[in-house]
Image (cartoon, rainbow, N blue to C red; front, side):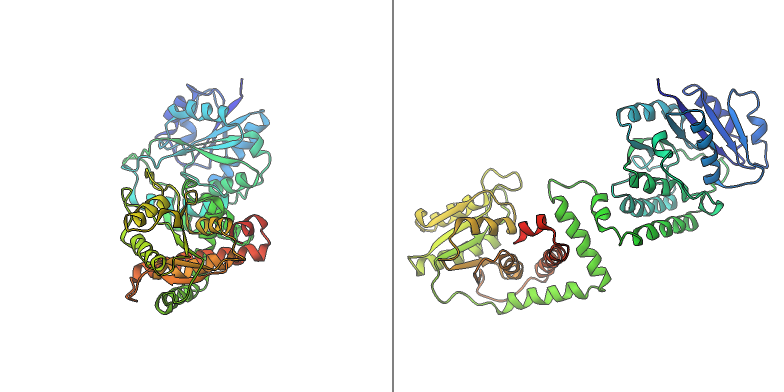
Length: 455
């Protein structure tokens, strides 16, 4: 049976500490309360309880008090240590849930999460908490649900590996730093949903939002700078969207944003200029070509969109002009549709009078990069000329991706006119910046896995 101890730091908690202590004893017989130099009746309120009471001669701060109680628990061979506040904000009745989750995930730091229900959460505290969550999640390299909650379960094996800063000035930085120390030691956090209890008659919180969050951010910023801003951590800290973008894509997304910020947006506007230039000054195909490539586009209720139709109509005109040209339409099943993008495009062209034998449909790729990789595998690029047909706003990114894949090609805009949609151009410029940042990073770091995807 696991040996669990509970540690509670207490500073001027006379009105609540006895009630909290009695409730804790219902679930855990090893309770350590550290009286941090209280000047009220906190010590007197604890008399008669079967607990260990440690008293600091002066107020040394929450960090030092927690660490003193933790060290005492470790000396008593605790397997895990639960910490909670003495002001009644945490319900001791939740202790069994922490223990149950820890027993199923021994190599984790278990933290109460108050953010599932924020109705009673003071607005300024909520905002400060979310700011801290972002920075600490980045530094820890995984998403932390509630970085500021002091209701936690620390595995003893973790506590034996760390040496935190327990100066008085670090009182409310301590718990944030412990998350980062834990991550560096290989321990991720797991949340336990708990209620946010704020008694209007309780003593004022010792936490000072602006000051303490500034100290926390400073601590995290130093941690990030010491690791070159740890961009991988930012990627890993984002909510899980792997069904949409894989880990490499998320990393490049984060790095692209960092570059934009670091260059005061100059790098983005250079990508925007490139996108606009190709959109405006690329002309329709005048000569012949062996193959036409049309990248797929997300369907609307299994129907092709207007922009996709423009691509297909341009391909139809070129096929009617040159009977020796073949067409490859690219795009698999996306968005839960019943028909692939490529097959929908093929059916549209057949309805427009194009012979089906001239149209080839590739139905596995899910994005533009995959489209072009599939085209390279399908066509003998050394002995065939290729023309890539897409919308004007999409030309620059298609050209960059195709060039990166060493796919010899010409560009052909889907539209005759050069009237441009500024919002689509801005979006494509951002995606182009994302790709080019990732490509340069992969080359610089010689990341063979990423290079194999884009070359």
